Length: 278
Length: 278
Image (cartoon, rainbow over all chains, first blue to last red; front, side):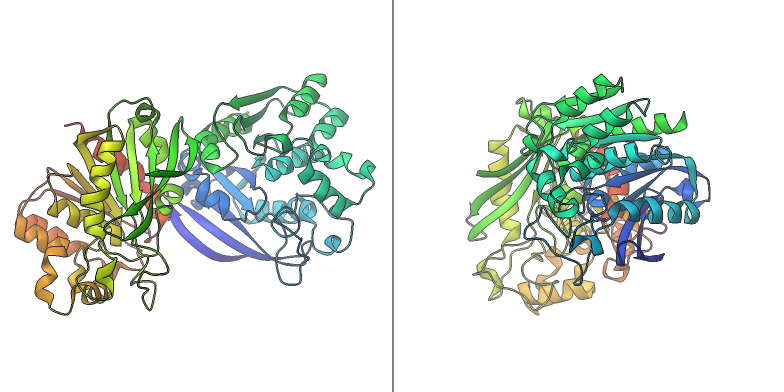
């Protein structure tokens, strides 16, 4: 775990690390915000943030404006990259597939299966590594994300509820099996047989596994240019049908980008802080 | 004044405009954060932010994290580009001269003098245009900036105290006549005759024109990789010698970048809000 950058920030430290990932079969970067409490060795809650299409481990750090309140609340923020990277890694034909578009699943289809193992990377490699390396309170870890990363947060939370105590999302892709982005990615990464898709679709996971969290928070802009890809109502219906408590806030005039996210980031941090201290 | 982008942000709007500038002789962009109060037509205080070397009108908007508190305080934030731009605009031999490095002065030397008229652009074009186009309270306008833009903020404040009621800076170039960045830029833009430089050097302007502001705030990181270019102590001495009240805060461990700026941006907004409501 090589520290490649650090900058003091709100009395804590914004860091970037690089590791050689066995699942991604290559170098990958992730960023960590360490509040001053964590730098002093105090055990802290941690929040994984999964970013959306075209983003990297830098996007959240620069654009989401989360450090101020995370510093106050004493929360460690962790942001992995959105896919494997490198010259020897398969590249897609556009920005919504391949590098920058890992969808937080394990690809089973060539050429993607060689490197695109984002689910295993996060759950079986990054998560235990950071629990070991950082002063993380193991029973106070939450996950959130945006768009493709909102899909990632919801699905990883429903797949691994023992790992994540709280989950929220900004404009998540709630039903990837039913939207162009998801259909394209799942066909490429998982193959055309849609029976394999259900386990990676947040709406279907909720229907299958039921209510797993005390509360889930989703913020959605009503001027979101990608609204038709997101299907928050389908996720809401699934939650209702299994009695999963969901707060779905729909915000007039907000679009899909980080000006929307920064406007509500504090609410998400407060939401997780409350859930994680329970 | 063409609106080229807008995004809802903290119930206000983050906007980007483009104009054809008569001083820069070409198109230039600037960004404006309009708090909801301003969108509703209420007269608001305004703050000009001048960015540093290599930056654009976007940098402050994405990296400084100022919108949250500006929305609460009802302050309009204005961020111009850092130089003229375009294929027909002179380009320098490196990142510290030419496009992205306008130094907020009017060049007198070829080839720069043709387009590099940033001082006149801001003071005689942008400022009156925005006072006309936006609901700005004309007697509640402040200016701040970072590095080269900190130099810009201090010098424009001392040159045009009738236009700016408050001034602050992050890691400003306080004595450009005495540091490599400033020597290179001033030689190129103003010529080798250093007698012309004094009117564009914050430290010398303070010595010449005396105390003009009730209070000035400067934040400086002590791990700033460009500390030797900045000379805050020289500016402090000049302020002391003319009884200009200056709060120079030196912060252990902080570097020159926007993680430093975001850590103290709220203090600057509060500082200006207090000065501007006087």
